[in-house]
Length: 239
Image 1 (spheres, rainbow, N blue to C red):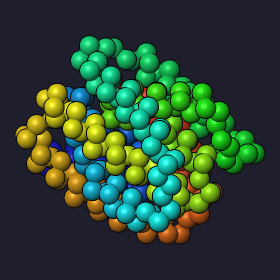
Image 2 (image 1 turned 30 degrees about the vertical axis):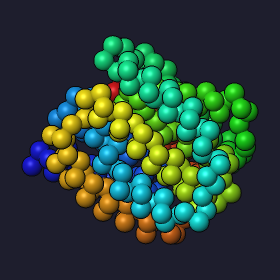
Image 3 (image 1 turned 120 degrees about the horizontal axis):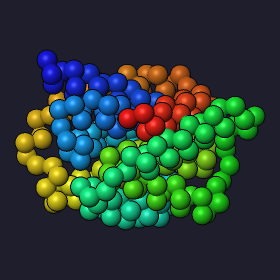
Image 4 (image 1 turned 60 degrees about the vertical axis):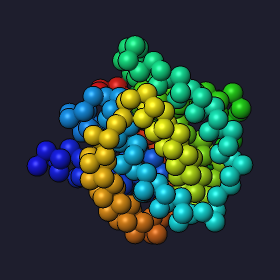
């Protein structure tokens, strides 16, 4: 019953959220997993739970992928995530999480209330800040999606293009960061049963999400993304 409540059912919800908005699965899972696992381990399990779902989505939208668009952001993001992984047991980030939460709530409110639809290319320094912050919190908690979603959304003309880029980006991230976590002993063979149970839930959620997104356009996706960014901010503020 514990596994059902804290792993399987949250994974179904995480799959639905990730499939519709392109991110957010870790936010859902990190509400539940720390109840049964340490936070660093929870972050690693949450990432791997969505690995098959990310692969499914990346494959589904592969024809809309712009690979050049994700290479250099990934290099920045992954480098910072590596540093954060080395600091995971020695840094108190409660204040930083609260500051990030406030930023995300403010961004969400701006994009939801502004007349602009949020489609603009960010200056290079803003994009780099997004990548650094996302990589840092991904390394610590497995939650690096909100600002990267804003970045890829600002470049996309269609929902397929957006979902292709962000899902491939997160798939690359999972392969890289998971390898580092196993190497550092944060994850181990004992975590595999929980991961496999979660994968089943994630796949079910992704299948449901695919039926939902088939009826959505890029504007609807944007509203969902901006709303979830606000929810992400509240999660950071009050966790």
